[in-house]
Image (cartoon, rainbow, N blue to C red; front, side, top):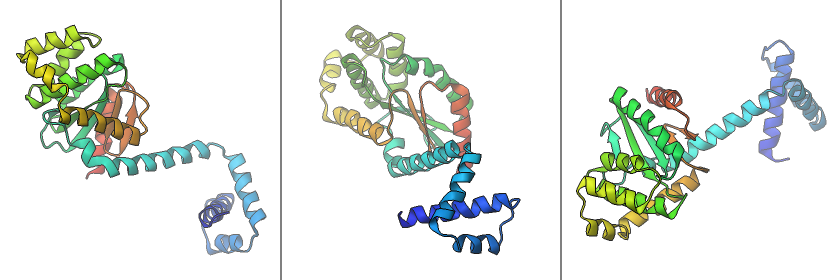
Length: 246
């Protein structure tokens, strides 16, 4: 047993004794644990866990939350720094909501009204969009066109036009580009631009670091949320992130 594991078992035993004694901590509890051998300590811990199995998922959830917070903190600057104009809301928002998405993802499309509502209601919120085209080659081409729009300062309108066109396709990209007034030749050339390709590769690396399993994936504060969680869940996560900053 490692030192860390031994410390955990001893602590757990002390807690178990405290709970058995009515929840009162005392030097006597600590001394009692110190006088026990390993088998006695493990027996107390085992009996307590068997009597209170509900603490296991709670402990695992807390451990995962701490690990997630550590990963987010490590990559926060990259996560919250948008590519060119690939963001909406408050330029210096007090909370940043990051979305990893794919234009071929129906759940991402369904989440767009939630984002629009949050932006309309929360004037201190900044939303950073991170293209994660993992579902098809067509969504990869749509992502590149979207990043080109970000460089032209027309991200929001182009982003919505691509979603409105349905599943990603050359026709949909061309229609959105025409509506935005983009030069077709310039747009085509941009799909091979080094900075655009590097951005998509970087987003993939960030998603892997976060252990994201699909789209949409949201990052706000120290939290990572998976799937189309809906307006209320996003609003609550934003509120928790804002409270943590105070």
